[in-house]
Image 1 (spheres, rainbow, N blue to C red):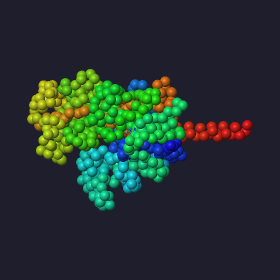
Image 2: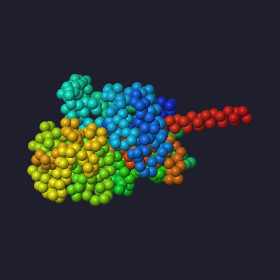
Image 3: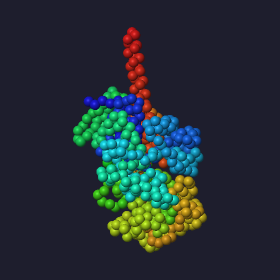
Image 4: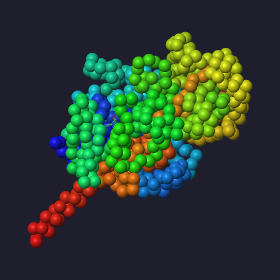
Length: 576
Ligand SMILES: Cc1cc2nc3c(=O)[nH]c(=O)nc-3n(C[C@H](O)[C@H](O)[C@H](O)COP(=O)(O)OP(=O)(O)OC[C@H]3O[C@@H](n4cnc5c(N)ncnc54)[C@H](O)[C@@H]3O)c2cc1C
């Protein structure tokens, strides 16, 4: 029987942080990963981490953070859990720095930029990481979301991405730098198409994995944790399956469930979500998070919370057959809020400020679907000016992807086009008169700069992704230049928000509210500390890492207390 102090199930941001911390605290650790690559959704992600009051040279404070969180969160949020998150964030950051991970503060406005206490310096990222440092483990790291790379190939950091995407001053030079460093990396080019440099989620998972390599911690790939072993009311290990072989591995001090959400489990979606949707709308890797450990937790009496909702992001799946969802899915994070466009439900009515944060957009879709039954999918309607300037899902701007290069079978299936709004409405079963009225109103708002219906472009967050050359409102441009286009938008996700109910020490609670000894959870495997709220960029990975860190601290603390207790007991026995 294999025995470790700590078993971590899942190798995303939550699992890697828990494992690195537990090892640094002197515990023996095994990370068990179901997929054949490590890193989870986290490795594919933007790698942005929301850590308020991170103490990296800004003047944020705990009070300011709570002013913001109190204003934007609602529902049954547990104060002690949010406090644990806020109090431990800066400790986590200091710890990461101590293992040579140097965070960079990004100037992203919080997602409720209009709320009291909102700021634009709570999100951090890590600089580009050289995958060579991973040695043989480079190839087994899950690759970044291909859409985050230039032409699905060249690694870019956020600054480079923004410079090129917005054709800001010096963009051609940046383009040359990004492609040049790829092609002049002769050694790697001889071996693989994959860029050795890693940014975003890769720059987060890479250094954590490196630390585990240096500390001799195994990440066992292709091994699913299927059951939690309970002895005498305590979780003492896990049952795993690897290539059909079942094994039991013992955890002396604790098991930390960091196995992500349940977005790839259709029956759990159907059971928990108000609007079930399809697993294929998810933008997370399809071979990863199937919620099996949520089921394993339920089987031993664990409680759950916030399972009714996801981290929403509107998605547009391109009609390409036989490819993984990574090739298929386009996150329409910013596309839906660009000027010269509007979103309507299938009753031809607007339902949201289209330029708001993606999670709010998804939440609005969900509410509208519940209210009208005419959303999921809704429609993004845009004109030729939008088409010229901006991408829409899988359709790149006209200059890169003119209409003639769009595959013929995408027309009137994925993308619809007509010379008039009436004809477009006809094609997609909307009400032509209502569509013309919606567009006429949007055109008025573009002229006045005010959207009295939904306030599009009123906040710093909205304006961040508008067109700065548009006056008076960068998020509002007239929709008037034919031809007109439409693309359906689904209620996609970045993972699920709910899972095992855990306390401020990341201990999983049973249905009586008591901690289940030996069992911890972090990341999307557990309920979000913010409930149904996505407070800022990095609002999922931030708490995932913080609670992974907290779980490791708690286990080490318990182990110390137990060994001290044992020592005292022995001393007392010897004295007698
Ligand atoms: C394209 C994209 C960009 C994103 N960008 C950001 C961002 O910048 N900032 C942000 O905060 N959020 C972002 N998100 C969301 C974020 O990536 C996830 O919410 C977060 O990574 C979840 O972390 P985790 O550690 O809980 O789970 P994951 O990173 O998904 O890791 C879970 C791991 O557990 C493994 N696993 C599952 N079941 C088992 C089992 N039974 N046994 C063993 N292993 C198992 C999975 O294979 C997986 O590797 C993004 C998501 C996507 C798709």
